[in-house]
Image 1 (cartoon, rainbow, N blue to C red):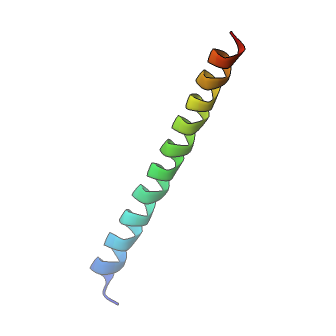
Image 2: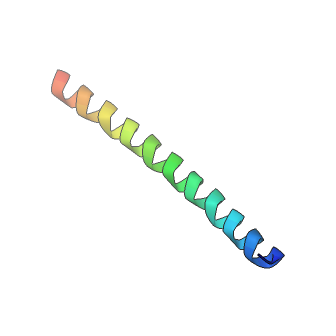
Length: 40
């Protein structure tokens, strides 16, 4: 596999991980808001 392709793949994988982390963070925030709303 050539270097350029490897480089692009690793960049994609990193951004994918970043995206998943963001989604988890949003889900946690959403869960928190939902809980606060239900407790009021």
